[in-house]
Image (cartoon, rainbow, N blue to C red):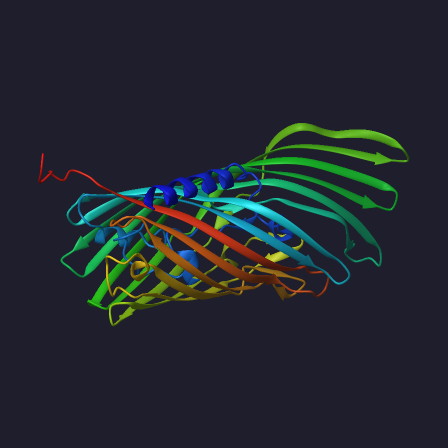
Length: 411
């Protein structure tokens, strides 16, 4: 049973990873460095992405570095994930369906001392894959319009180095150092009257960021947690080519010209979470996060950055009646998530909401497991030329547990 699960999981995850360049096709990835990527480890995607107060005892919790302080000795954890998404895009008079396969993350963690742990994780931070045709926009201080055709690809990657330390039996603190890197490619054409201007631009991004976290066990069944993501600037540089066509005459304005461009600013983000266990087999998680995008003083040609609120609620259950019976060890999960978004377009929020259910399938008698979840969600709305996204998502995460440096009882 264990070998079959591991082999099939690796096959599916490698298949998803091979499509990782197509990690998003949302029209909202036109803004900034693209759509921010939700990359939840273990069974977090089953519980609405909540888990700031959960320890990294049986899986790697990427939401809070302080969770590593609760790692068990001699346990080496490995986690890899992928997603398959079917999305329907709706506007006032049009509907389109697309399928995407996404690489989610690759991570491992291990204890450093009896009171501390370390993890390394690679995952996407954002994706900018979009295609928009003949978007009609008004010319400022005029009754006339112009048309935009845009196509983009790329995004930022996220490399996390995390460390957590436990003081006594109840308090843990942690820190994550994040290296962000990547690039976006943007091709846009502007049609004004009978003139067409085409811009090809590649923008490279480099930067670092710190995250601080804490967890505190009030008692054996109740834990609270908090995170603090430091605001930072991601340095940007671009190479751009510009051509113009007017009266059937094409002229080159710029050719592969390198120059500085507006840097990308990541905001102060504060999160709070709670985890409560009932009768040892039912667990409730609740998270709230606030992101202060407005204070970054960024704006987009077609929208504004605004402060963001995110709520997540999750519930897990396992029977735990007989550990020798496989289905008594299976975990069941459900969650909801609401996010009012960090973009405002034509004074309309681009918010999102989702519900999820999932299974935690144990492998052998260790912490190894296969996590499968299904989510249904919506993003945006049909109003003022905005687009509404309806998606169905299946997430597959393989969490493997290896026990190291334990002496054999029998030779």
